Length: 265
Image (cartoon, rainbow, N blue to C red; front, side, top):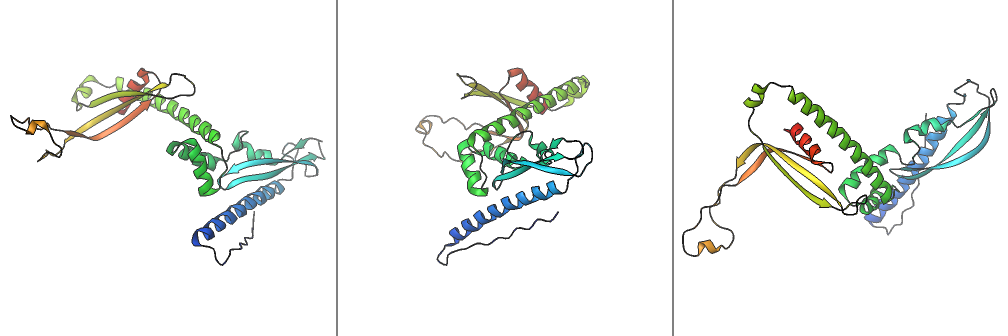
């Protein structure tokens, strides 16, 4: 399949470097949208036979446009509907191509980019940044739904992995457990806002540390202290650094946090 798109850009002689870059980026995104439309049309033409009966004689019976959000903007795809001259059934060849979208309108590359942006910025900022950087048109609500759905799936996977790790660790011999080095486990939590719960929800965090390193002792005080003004001065305390550590977090029950912390250990 050969797709060819011509690109002609008119740039004013007084344009700055920033304006040139913006115009070239806009023209490139437009060319990419046209290339995707041509690629879909060529893919459709290469499959003239009806998949059920194999008949190649068909008749065009209308076109329905569908908008797909991609990383370079929204693309209007004309989905042609044909009627098989052999069995009389109607079908759209492009339906098989759009099966991976699962009824949605956002492409898989844009979904991945939206989830990364949704984890990095607020949803409205993520929508603006994606549009500015790549020309993608996706709303803040769509980014929120994609990010939350992926987060829930990842949380279920982590919980299943933690349960498997805990079940396998319980089968080990007690002598092997006693031979292991002691670990430091710290637990904490905090309340955050939530759309599902009016009073918010508690996020639970645990850190598992297997190695602690001593920090260098201070040679002098960097802040003013009343303990230095006469009388015996209290010796500085030895501070430590968690050299090897791993964090786990969940919004689920405390039992889930314990399983994930045990699996991390």
